[in-house]
Image (cartoon, rainbow, N blue to C red; front, side, top):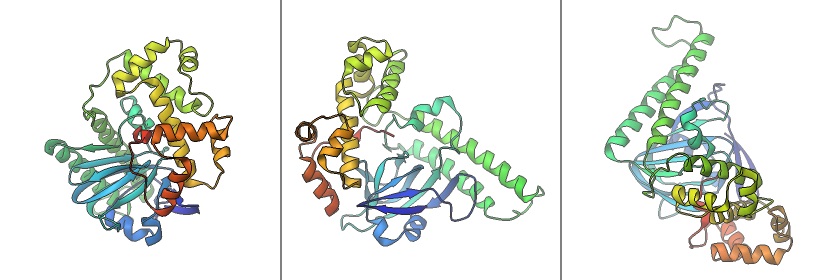
Length: 323
């Protein structure tokens, strides 16, 4: 990973220190902590790659897009490119003592499996608490990926007769298939909030809305606009969103705008007026009122809290996973 500092959030680009150009890496949480500078470990970072972490033991709390996620044995986290995280820490604020394995992979490496589209796109949950049988299945999957990844670090693994380049190519293809299987397992997990998986065609309407929202949240929060673009009635969008998330289309639109505002407040020095304008607000006061109404904190208070190293304690719409 390559770090580039900008204000209090550090951008981290994918860079495999093993110098393997497969677009995937398997490592432990301890190895990740040892790789990063102490100042980086404690600060929020924004990734340009996917990060899946399976916790096998220990305790800590991770922050993903300004929402806290407890990490204990059986916790599964999936961070998507663009999301802001703070590595799991203990009650004392120091990096947590976790027995965990991480899978890092780029958008180019991700398998082309239609069943995993929602997981990859970032419209699914960020964190799960796995049941014992689910944990065993995921633990086996990441152990197998780890074993295969280790062979890439050997010039000619024992018993291998293929040329080194061919071995890397074949093992990379196998790792992509194993990752695809793991992502399918993730897609099958129950919703952490206990909501049923919506049935077609409601799921299709919801996903169509989420993708259009991702493209256009900075220009409109009007559900009538989204309904017209997608060819549905506003009530159809709202019913589909309620079935999939328990929140209305308007609430999801507001949450996406708020999340982007939080990212900009924490990541940049842009004035409030500039942030509001970038998100479609013509007046800084309107942006301030909107942000305060949705989060319970003024933009200035949120920015100061982030720069001080903590987040205001309030229910936040940023738990909505977004790219």
